[in-house]
Image 1 (tube, rainbow, N blue to C red):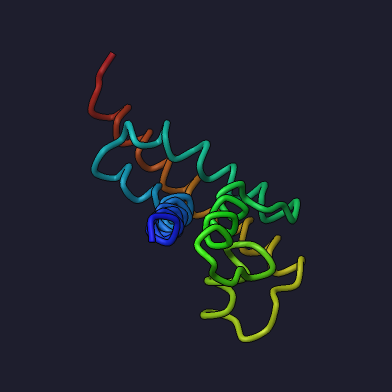
Image 2 (cartoon, rainbow, N blue to C red):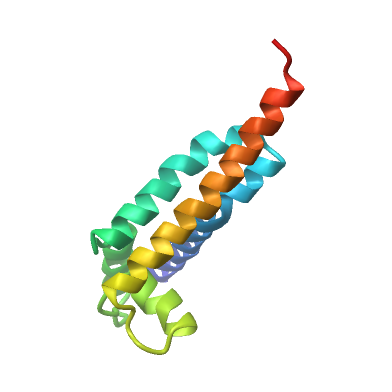
Length: 124
């Protein structure tokens, strides 16, 4: 039971991290200091996708599920949860590049807006 709960906790944390990596730049519109937390999360998420790596949280969750006597799924978190819901077929690498690039473009635009807004409100 404990391993099952820990695996579910890792799953929720993983989902929260993925959501933060993808959309956390929007928090900077309200809290500009979030940029310093979001930038490494965004870069990690893009690198993991582009390099076709498995996030360390996935094997941790799988090991906890095995210890709980549950079945584990092949592939990473994105393939298992996000791709299965949003895209009926496995995402090709080219599409992953496009998605990663679009995440970078959108978040850099948000960063630029926040930095410009802060620079305008702090006269030298």
